[in-house]
Length: 253
Image 1 (cartoon, helix red, strand yellow):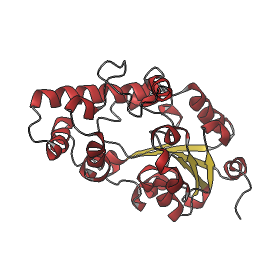
Image 2: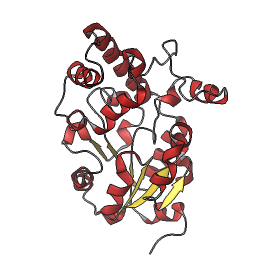
Image 3: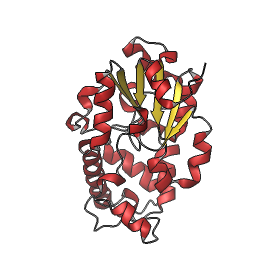
Image 4: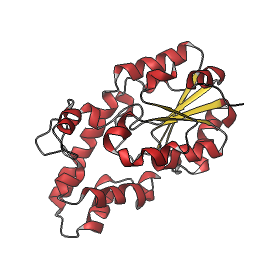
C-alpha cells in the first residue's frame, strides 16, 4: 500500500538509494552562487570563461550547448558504460561529431577544466545533504548511490565528504550498465542483498532513472530543486515517474 507522505515511505523502507548529480551535488551549486544571481538578472546561460568554477565544456569548445548535451546524454553510452576510458579520446569524439575543426589543444584544455569542475562538485557536497545521509544512517538505514558517470566525472569521488557513508556505490562506468537499464539497479541490490521493494530511490529524474527504478518496484522520489532552476520545461515529464516529489533532501526526514 502506498504511504501517505515521503517521510512515511522512507521510514517504512530499510534502504534509500540516491542519484548523485543534481540530487546530492550540483556543478552549478558549487560555482559561488552565480547561477541564482544571474538567473535573477534574466540570463538562462550564466556560464562564462571568467567564472570561478570554470566554463562549461561547450563554452570552451565554442559549440552549441544543446548539441553538446545531446552528445553527452544521448550519443555516448560508451562513455558512461566505461567502454571509452581515455577522456581526451571521448571528448574529442563528441566534439568532432559537432565540429571536426576543433583543435587538439583546445580539447585538452577542456578535458582538464572538466575534470576540475567535477572534482569541485565531489568535494563540495552541500552540508545539509551530508547531514541527511548521516541522519539516515543514524536511523539504521542502508544508503546507496547509483550514478551515470564517466571516468572523469567520478575521478575525485574518494575526496567527497560523503563517500564513506554509502553501503553500496554503483557508477555506470564501473559496472558497464547505464540508467535506466535494469542491470545497474540490480548491481546495487546485489551488493546490499536486498529486494527492490525494500528501497526508496531518490533522484532528479534525468536519464529516465525514476522510470527504471519504479519498473523494479522501488518507491520513487523526485527532487526538483535543480530541475526547477535549470530545466523547468522537464519538470512535469519527470514527475510522472515519481511516487513523491520534494524540493530538497531534508524533506525525506
